[in-house]
Amino acid sequence: MSNDKLNWKDAPCHFTWGMDRTVQKVHESSSVFQGENAELYSDDEESCYMFVYLAYLEFLVCRNVDQKFDGSLDKADKIIGKMRDESGKRAFQLVSLANRAWILSMSGESPEAIASVTSQLLKVYGDYLSDNNKKETAYLNAIEAFALRRILLNEKSEEKYQFAIRVIPDIAMWYYELERVAGSSPMMNSSQKTRAKIKHFKKALQFKPDYIRCMVKLIDCYLRVGNVRDARVELNHLEQYDTSGIATAICVRASFYNTVNDNDKALRILFKAEKLNHSDIDKNIAITYILKSKSVSPLKRNKYLKDALTYVEKCLLKHPGSYYGIATKFEVLCLLKESTDIVENFLRKLIVDRPLPPSHLLSLFLKMMKIFEEANKFNPHPDHEIVLTLYENMVQVALQGCLKNDDNGEMILSATVKVILNEAKTFVDRYLKKNRNVLNERNERFLELNERLLPYLNNDAI
Image (cartoon, rainbow, N blue to C red; front, top):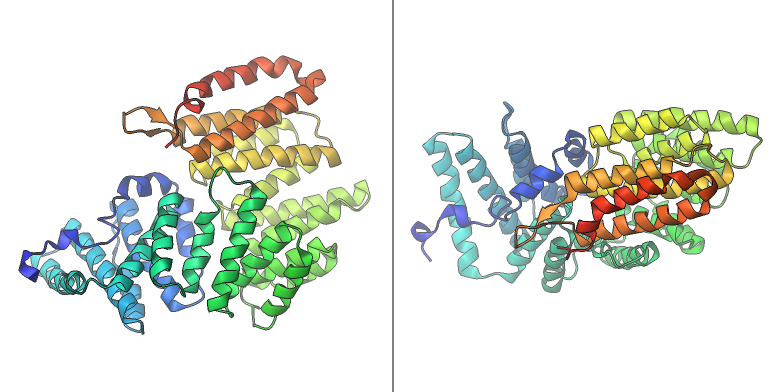
């Protein structure tokens, strides 16, 4: 097909992949949006996936701000110019040029500036269509999958990555990314999800043995399933590389020593890394203090817990959307037996600020229920009603932020959200029965919340 018969607006890129509404909904929180910039990649080619997506994201979410939107594409183009794989190079050129053309045309740039970009785009687009190169198509699927994962469309992302891997089976990053979506099925329990992650991480390391991000994640997964032996083997592998400037690697080392009950060594590792000024270091210091508090006298316990609170608040100042940072602060407040007002104000602020996407907030509140129950076994909190407050927050977030239109125009909840809500409902029901001597009068509130959810829990999920 000649270039003069092509429409540049048909070229594959983030603007033509039909994700605009979902992007705006997921990234309505500024802290979530800022978190995209904080994500680190181990080499230039991996960061290119982020830069071409960020250009689209920045324009779509912040288009009313006086800002130059193609800076991320300039960074991407420098990386693209160095790429050795010709199929990957042309796929990224196609997406970068198409994103740039859309941004220029919607920003009111001069016809000359737009024409300069679209003429380059039509040449690359025409070559792509003429060659029918499967490897280029695989890269385009992976670029789209990368974006889909970041707007929580995990099933679609998995399909795209699986297609890409069938065509090009030896790109480690795709297995690393696939792990983040392949274990997202609502029908899998946490242990099954973790074991699925381990499989993908091990596959990625087959093709890239020095993949530090992947080693870190694999060690973490081994620790989560209690496999200390394999975690130690992988940690020995990780320590062959200089990770002194990589916060996640330092934190997973500390986690290993916490797992084998050497909290003091974990703290020494983390304190040495404080100069990195990274929120993960602060969070893990807080977690280590919590663990230390559980093996000392009540007097020392409160000191360690207050130290933990200091560090987790430092973490949240740097990264308000830290899922585990928020969960850790909640755990500290429960263990300190802070007043119900303090705890509920903390929870209310999460509803107002929305530091995470709605589905992540639901998952977080469910995690908090379990944290509260475990904390009560160790240091009982006087007010069990906090569990009902968490459930009420979940109902509010679900009905205000998670409802979507199905093909018939009816408002429904996704399968994943329904699984989370049903698990929370079962948890609260069991908790109320177990503590009926103090919560018997709260059953009515629980039933009212269930009635609000009932129409959406019974319909078909998308």
